[in-house]
Length: 299
Image (cartoon, rainbow, N blue to C red; front, top):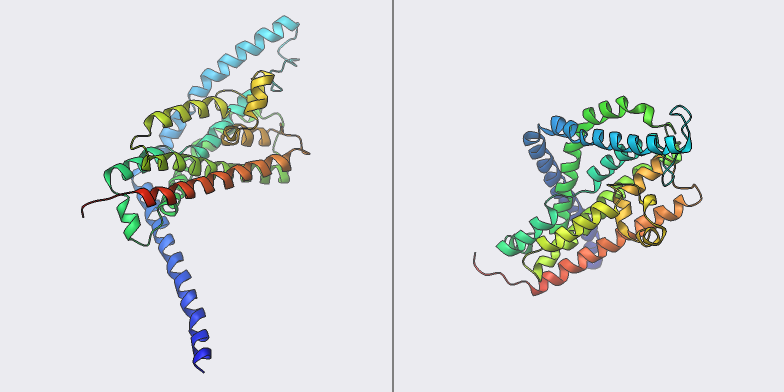
């Protein structure tokens, strides 16, 4: 009887623990979302203004393709010029899609915020309270992205509607669309765990601004945010293909535009997922080891 009674109490106790944990994470997510919806009312106008630099890119690439067409003797109506597998309209559509991808993968202030919490001692509250730092930060970032897109969906829809003629390939198939959405979600998680791992370096070096600057520099050029990676020279391009940066911007846009061959798409998705798992593990290990060497004093 005692053994039976003990077993009968174990399952409800375990279920209660899971229920408490889920309730805690839900409260954190809901609170963070409410806060961002309150003070982020400028998202709509701010997002619309972020698309203005694309006009410069359109004029620049129009001049480039126009010069190539003139050199080849093509008219604008019969233009077949391509650069790195992208025609003029593809190039404009690519830039619009990379802005969507970067909005998912960018994590402004995440690494520097973690390093500051370590430096100022705020990290102690996560060591004495039953709240996981990485889980808490992930939920706040999810809330940030949900709030951003809830308000910015209007400007995004307007810009893409006005530029609909640039999407010459049309709407992708259902399978490609699923792959595109999955690549965006994984780009968000890769961006989060990568920058969080950089922030964890604060356990060893109190200031990470220099490392963060180097990362942002490489990310801007090697993610495809500035130009399609197929424009890189063959030697450099082959190296960049093995780096995780391309999955932050170039890869989702290339998936949507059909630039990834269907036979290569499953493998590319698997590689992106592998990078996600890699940075998740690195982030967790860095946090666990950092906490063991961390020393905090005072109340």
